[in-house]
Image 1 (cartoon, chains in turn blue, red):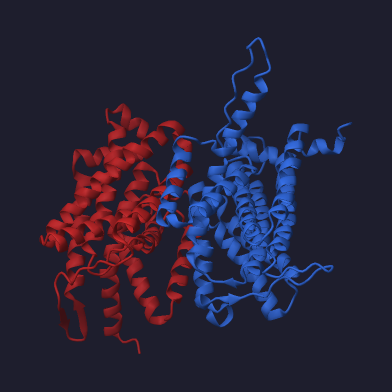
Image 2 (tube, rainbow over the protein chains, first blue to last red):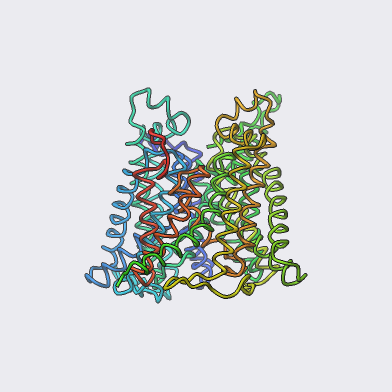
Length: 343
Length: 296
C-alpha cells in the first residue's frame, strides 16, 4: 500500500499506525464495556487528557506557565451557560461562544503579560483566574454565585440525543471535540510555526536575533490554547449541569490537577497527557476509599516526576520503544538509546 | 458616614492586620529573592507552625513565647530539610532553567503536607483563646489587645530580620548570593549552604507567624491556602523577592482591605484586591516601592 503523501504532514508511518490504534481503542472500548460507569470514567480521562495537552502546548513548547488554566475553563463554561440561559441560544452555539469568550480573555491576558519573564506570566494568569472566580461568586444576581448555576443539557442533533443519563453519547461528542482539537494542536506543532515555538523554547534570545517576534508567537500560542480551553469549558458546563465557582472546579486545585497530568504524562509531547490522564484518573477510581492518602500519592508522584523522571510516562514509553527497535540488530553496535529531551 | 474617627479606626485595623501579612510575605519574598523558587508550600509551613504552637501551649501547657520559639525552630529544620532533599538536587540538575519546575515541586510539597495534616489531625479547627484578652479605648478608637500583641510581635520579628540581613556577616552573605551567586561563590561564600539556610529562615518566619496568629487563625489542614494568596498579593505589590518591599506592602494591603470591606461589602473586596494585583503585575511588575527602572 502506498503511503499517501498528504499524510506526511501529519506524521511518520509508525506514528500514524500508533495513532490509529489508540483512536480505535478510544472509539471501541467504552461501547464494548458499556454501562454508565465506564463511559463516565472515559469522559473524565478525555477531559483531563485534552486539558493536559493544552497545558503542554503552552508549557512544553513555549515555556509559558498558564497557572490560571482553570480560569479560562471557567470563562468558557460560564460564557456558554449564561448565553444559553439568558439569551436562549442553543448549547451547540454555546460551545463556540465559550471558545470565543476564553479566546478574548487569552488575547487580553497574553497581550498584557507575555512580554514579561516566565514567572510573572505564571502569577498574572493565577490572578486572572482568581479575579474571575471571585467576580463570578460575587455577581450572584447573574451567576447565582456559590449556590450554583444550573445549565441545560445539549439539544438533540440529527436524531442523536445527548441527555445526561447517556454518558456514552456524551463521550462520543467529547471524543469528536478532542480529536479535532488535538489534530489542530498537532498540525500547528508540526508546521513552521511549531518549529519557531521550539526554537523559542530552546533559545529565546537566539530566536529574537533571527528577526522573529517572540512575543507574537507566544501570543499566537496562548490565544489558540485559550480558544480550545474555552470550548472544553463550554462542553463541561452542559455535561456537568451545574456550575459552582469553587477552587476545586475553577481554581488552584483544578489547575494543579491539569498540571500534574501534563507533568506525569511527559512535557513537550502532547500525547503524553493521554497516558497521564488514563493513569491518574484510573488510580483515583481504583483507590477511591483511600481518601486523603490518594492526594498524598498524587503529590508524591508529582515530586518524583520532577526530581527523578523528568520525561514522564511518555519519556518511558519512548525509551522502551527505542530499546525494542534496537534489539533485532545482531552485531550489537546500535546507537545507545537516546534520552528524551527535557523541555 | 465616614467620619475622621472611622477612617482612623479603619487605618489602624488595617495596619495591625497588614503587619502580619507583611511578616508572612517577608519569608516568601526572602525565599524567592535568594533561592529563586516561588514557594507554593508557604501556607502549609504556616499551618505546621500553628499546629506546633497549639500542641506546645495547649497539650503541654507551656507559655506562648516558648510555643512561638519551638514553632520557629521546628519549621527552620523542616525548611532546611526540604531544601536539602528536594530543591537543591533539582537546582543542581537543571541550572537556571529550573524556575518553573521548582514552582511545581513546591505544589507537590503543598499537596502532601496538607493531606498528611488532614490524616494526622483531622479537619477539626484547633484554636487558642486570646493571648491577651480585653481591649483598649481611646475616645472613639477601639483596639483589641490581641492586635497589639500581634503588631508588637510583627515589628520585633521584622526588626530582627532587618538587622540580621543588614548587619551580620551571614546576612551580607545572603544578600550577596541574591545579587550574584557566581560572584558570591568566588568570594568564598558556600552558596549551597546559604540557599538551605535562607529556605530555613523563610520557613521559620512562616512558622512563627502561624504560631503568633493561632488565636485569630485556628489551625486546620487547609488554613494555608487563604494565607498563601494574601502573602502572594503582598509579595507582588512589594516587588518579587524584595523583603523590604513586602514589609511595606503588608500594611498597605491591610489598609486597602479594611477600606474595601467598609466601602464594598459582601465579598467584593476579594475581587477588588485580586484585580489590583493584576494591575500591579501589568503596570509595575517590579513592585510599587522599587526604584528599579527597567521592567523585568
